[in-house]
Structures are given as C-alpha cells and as structure tokens.
Image (cartoon, rainbow, N blue to C red; front, side, top):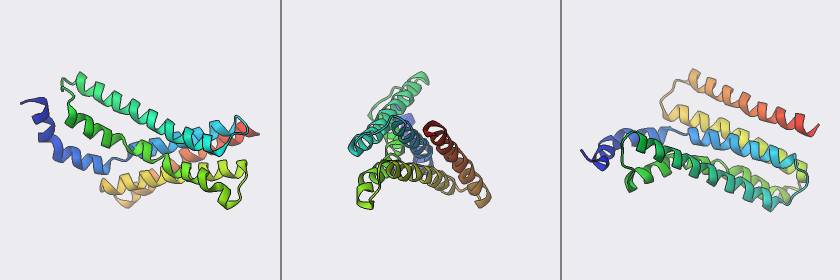
Length: 172
C-alpha cells in the first residue's frame, strides 16, 4: 500500500480526530496569553504591534507544529505528500485561530475607551477564556462526560490563572 493509500485508509479516523482535537486551540490560547504578558512587561507600544505580534506568533508556532508533524510522519516511514500536508495544516490550524480573539480584543480596545493596561487585561482575559472554551469544545466533541468536561475546564482555568499570576508578579 502506498503512503497516500495508507493515509486515505485512515482518513475516517483522522477526520474524526481532527474535528474533535482542539488541543492546538488550547495551546494557541495559552501562547497568546503569554505573548500579551510578555509584551505588557516591555512597556508602552502601539496596539497594532501587539495585534501583529499575536497573529504572527500564532502563525510561526503553527508552522513549527506542521513541520514537526511532517517530520514525525517521515520518521514513521510515511512519505509526506500533499494529502498528509493538507491534513496536518488543518489539524494544527486552531493554534492560529486561538490568536485571533485576543488580537481582535486589542484592536477594538480603543473603541471601549481602554488604555494600554486595560487593553492588556482585556486581551489576557479573552485568551484565558478561549483556552477554557477550546478545552471544553475538545472534550465535548470527543464525547467526554460532563464531569470530565468540568475537570478539563478547571485545569485550563487554573493554567490560565497561573499566567495571570505571572503577569501580576512581573508588573508589580
């Protein structure tokens, strides 16, 4: 069986996993929160720079994950072809999607009358909420029972709150 045939034979399983696997979104939200904290620790900067930093960081990490997945496919003796590449790109895309809501929060913050500090807190809150939301969506799509959904939401909230604690430590 060729590599492409092997991938196509696994597509029903891969397709289900892709629709249920939002781990990239959880990761991307945590990454966005970290970018906001790091950028805020540097002092004043234009909002447009933070929007760009959030989106570009998401894209760079997405590319890094795609590269790692493709390299992993090669190590498992699969010849990475276009089908595999497209699948991996789609599977890892939530990393980029997770950067969009915090970037939008930064972009609309002037309309809400927020200063730089308020903008950073809004973006950080949106990123943490996204992290919890992605984890809940992943658990529900995977068919997890409600108690497990609550546990994954709580774990991701605690991780997000840890990032917020780091921000408080850095800025105070």
